[in-house]
Image 1 (spheres, rainbow, N blue to C red):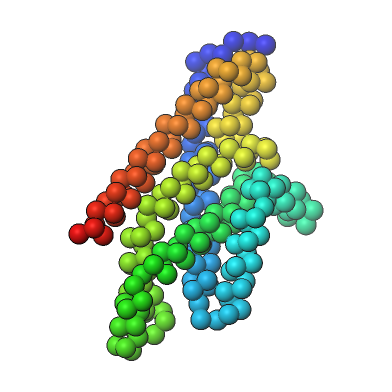
Image 2 (cartoon, helix red, strand yellow):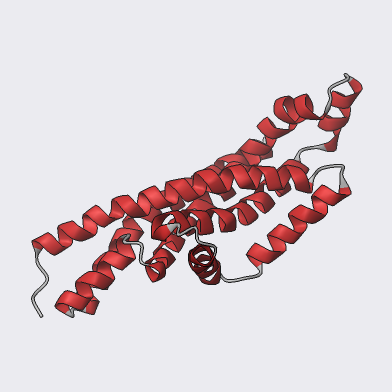
Length: 217
């Protein structure tokens, strides 16, 4: 056993970069998947809607921790051996796609139906209709809840510690095993998560207030 020192604190600070990389990767790939799911949910094709609904129910109805286990150990079982980092990115992205898909589906359907009807009356097909009329308006509605989800995603990256990925939480576990000072170490870890997430929380609240005032005019 040894005492917690400055080098240990620097180790925790450096671990933040992997939390940010993991969050960014999961948000990017999960966002692409979520957009596809949202478009499938509002599609005129019933089979596409049912596939999207099934996907959302599976990933929203099972624990994220279990999903990470299935991706990590399942890849080894299939002989892929994705490793902790890729498994964490994939598991978080699959989970994020389900939640972002629902957020963006709601935003798309919140666009006034008259907008769509007017665009169709002008002869716009599905692709141009979505790109030029619906999605730009839905993006404005979806910004605040999307930022709010990003806060939860940053905190959810802590679960990657259970499959061996050394992000902030796993770094805290490693230091605790060496120093056995859990209150100090995990208190610092909690503070670092707070410093990461609180600015995003403020941004989400400001965006919500700005949207509310814009629609009140």
